[in-house]
Image 1 (cartoon, rainbow, N blue to C red):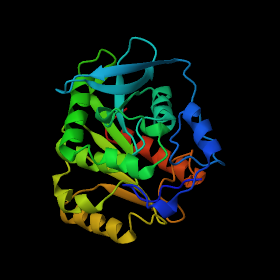
Image 2 (image 1 turned 90 degrees about the vertical axis):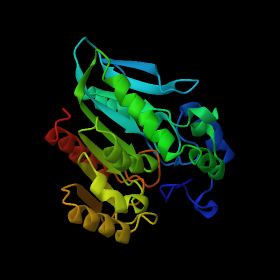
Image 3 (image 1 turned 45 degrees about the vertical axis):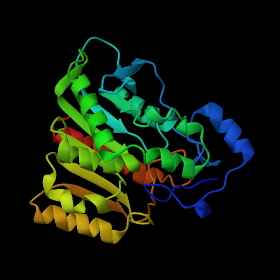
Image 4 (image 1 turned 180 degrees about the horizontal axis):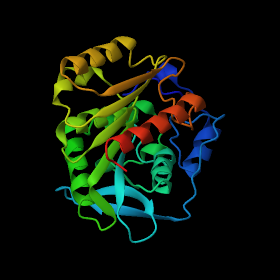
Length: 281
């Protein structure tokens, strides 16, 4: 069983996986490099939804692929941009999109690592995965996020003034940064995203962010959380950070050993309420 303990990847001693698990996971679509043999991932059905793959123009030779889940029908809906972990767009991220779609949102998960040509969910070597992830620079990712929101604002099924963003692990850091640089977002929810590189930039936030963190996270420390809270206060920001004392990193990821059902459900409820409170509903 593997347990990702750090937002930008774990050390080799954090992991172990069997050949049987690798073979089985290749077909189930979950991230081989983090799946727990004891996990019972949530599966949200597609009935009542439109599921499609979008190709978003982003100025690159090949456009940005994205998984899209949205309610059936001709109406316009608020949108959540879902930012993946280091494992790319695997079944957990797709299911998050379907969960939002069941609640009346358009949910879109861009594949930020598509330029590598690698199938990250099927990979079991964390060092190889992290090497691919690090090729995606902040500038490149921010550009892909901007291309995504620009595309969303032109779609007949979206409300262009009601766009939020959420992300997990690596994606949680993207949420904080996107709320600083992308004016299209009305609110963001960052699940255990790295804080240290962004603390000095707290004053740049243009949209409110709810941060959800685990008190047992060994990669994002209490000192990091305290420093971000202090930076937000000094900048006059009213962003929220909730810490779950008994939760580890990845506590929302229902396919990992780190999953904490009670805290995951509470965080999800808080996320939905936060989006609603800030006009993304």
